[in-house]
Structures are given as structure tokens and as C-alpha cells.
Image (cartoon, rainbow, N blue to C red; front, side, top):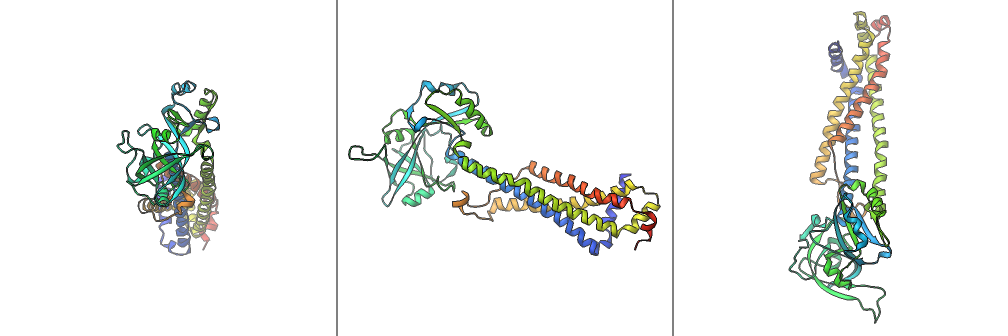
Length: 405
């Protein structure tokens, strides 16, 4: 019997009579569903893109979990107090780091920097993925004291790959009796992540160079850990903290970069509100359209009832009308939403001020699961919205419906 309801619903939907005001309302309802679904797809893609892009860039500068000593003091590595790191199954990689403030001087300028000494090939940072000029640090580098700096810092210091850079290691308050140690190296590469406050601050050198600069041979300031699941970093950090002895403590990236992750969470909290508003708008449009169709088709409803069509069939006819409107709107909305996402990903149509958003254009990350959720929710709620006026149509009096003009 459903075939009968589907045929009648399709005839009503495509009726030449729909070229009138009812046709305009139907097109308006389809447009509402299309705009709503496209907006939901684009919103989810943008928020997911922001979250993913910032998370990737934060990981590029840090690690899932960092182990440091209280008061930021350096410590020997390896150390018997850190044997717990070898007993935990979730730790995939551990990398020693020496990080301290220093002064960088080129031929034209001088800037305060944060020097990070790492072991190339064993690091947890992902800066190598953002190299735009020159190259990354090598395991056995032929250059003495090779350095990788950010694009913003390169601009501030007027440096290019191959040029020399002098670092002054600061330990305590500079005085005639406490002169900073000095090393001179060569810039081998420039990275660009678009993260203001990072690209103009961080310098990467081999661990041995950092230890030489700060006169701390065999010591480090941090152990960077990569785990098997970033999303569980908080729990892993707590588990590790229970095993560490004084003076060591652990913190996850969600703790060390809490401000940025809170900013991301604030954006994500707005998604349900936006989705609910858009779906409600689409539902109101569908309910209004079905009611207008019922008024327009009242005589036809009376004829169908007089020919033996029962109330359940009439209800299903108009529910299918709502389904046709919803599916047509979803096809258009999906095409518009995915089309925008693809164009933005390829051509970066919408720029952003990097100093405020840590990226130069709106990031996009859409998933099949997001599409399924958007379409499924819209269809379910639209069917419910169509059912309400359809019950009204099924209860119309046969005689009055046939005489209705």
C-alpha cells in the first residue's frame, strides 16, 4: 500500500497547481532545508578544522606529556628517578629537551628567544612538517650549531638560510662576574606555522649545542613524551604523576596550553545551539508548507477519502510530501556545503588575520560521520514535523472537503 501513498504524494508534489503561491512556499521550504543543512555542514567543518589545525600546531611545538623538575631546574639525563617512564605501555616515544631563554643577535637586530635543544630524529615535535625554506636539523649535521628559526623571527632578525646567528645564554642576572656564554651558529632552515608567539620566539638547535650554550653538559630541562592516544593525555599524565618521585612532575598538553584548548572548547560548545536553531527553522518551514498544501489539496483529499482511502494513508501521503521536500533540500544543501568545503580547502577563499587566529585562512575538516549525522537528524525531525499537519489532513470531513473551493 505504501506504493499508492508514494505515487499520490509525488503527484501532489509535482502538481502544476504548485506553480501558484503554494509552489513558492514549497520552494521556500526546500531552500530552508538546503540552507540549514549546508550551514550545519560548513559549521561543523570549520569548527573541526580550527580544532584540528590548532591541535596539530600545538603538538608541533610540544608533546602529549612533558616531564619537568620543580622550579624549572635542569636535571641529569638519564636519571634513576625517571625509571617509571620505561614501565608505562602508553608511552611510544620519549625525547630529552633543553629549553632556556636566550638573546639572539644577527648583523641587523637583536631579539629575546627561547632556545630548544633537541635530538634530531628522536624528537616529539613536528616542526619539520612546517619548513618553508632551507632544511630541518640532521642527525649528523656537518654545520656546527645548526639552527632552525620561525619565519616571523627571520623577518625580525633579517635572516635567511645560510646566514650566521649568535646566541647569548643567560643564567641569572648578567653582571661583570656572570657574563653570558656565547655560541655562533648558522640558520639552516625556516619554519612557518602561522602561530604568533611561537614563530617569533622558538629556535631549535641540537641538544648538544643548547647544553654548550648554557654550560649544562649532560643535563636537560624536560622530557617530552608521545603517547598512543592524545585524547587520553590528561589521564595518562595523572597515572604517570603517581609514579614520579620528587622533584619531577608531569603535565599534559591540555594543561600547558589550557588557554588555547579552552578557546577551542568554547567554539565547540556553540555547535549544538547553532544546529538546533537551524533545524527548528527548517521544521517550521516544513510544517507551514504542509499546512498550505493541505489547504490547497483539500478537495483532492475529500475525493481520495470518498474513494476508500483511510486516514492512515492520507497521513502517510503528506508525511511523504515532507520527506520529498526534506530530501530535495538535503541534496542541494549537501552539494552547497561540500562544494564550499572543497573550494575553501583548495583555494583558501576566506582569509584570516594570522595574529588573531594562528592561521591565514579558514581551516576545513569535514568527515563522513558529520554528513551522516546532519542528514539523519534532519530527516528524522522533518518526518516528525510533517506528521503533525498530516494528522490534521487525515481528520478532515469528507463532505466538507469535496465541497471545498
